[in-house]
Length: 194
View 1 (cartoon, one colour):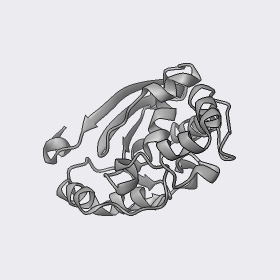
View 2 (cartoon, helix red, strand yellow):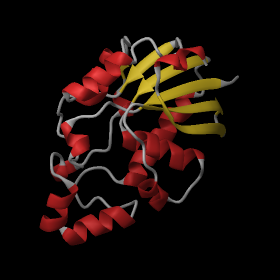
View 3 (spheres, one colour):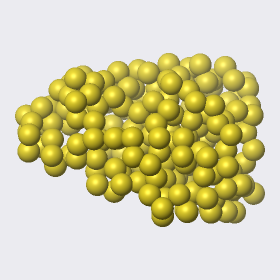
View 4 (cartoon, one colour):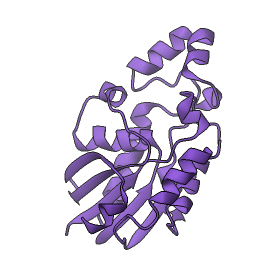
């Protein structure tokens, strides 16, 4: 049985633009307009899921997707750093930030470690492999990065070397234990024909 999963990264918002750890901010007007312009551009799916974050839910809605919220798809829990920019944390807690950026087990912020996120993503992927059909999931960039690290069996620090642009599609096809990965396809109105 082959599963097909399309992961959509959220549209742009103030937090992404400012390199701010998710603070629950809504999409900005340009992000909303860009997502709305892509409504109907995705292939039909047998199930549509969304991360519980504001920007993912708003992206799914702007894309015209009737998505079911899936708590397991949540972004990385940043603990007390939530809402702060990378620069703000670097000024306030430089050693903690450097530890977090280099050690996938670090929980300097009191939230979730990168390794824990990767493990959560792997559990979700294992369960998703049991679903026969096409899945679309609108998820935070870090969840996509965690899945890529997991699928490629890459070392934890590789998480920080992957960039996921807003409103791109990452395609997964395969089954538990063997996945193919296509990263960062830019969404376009013509994409539904693929």
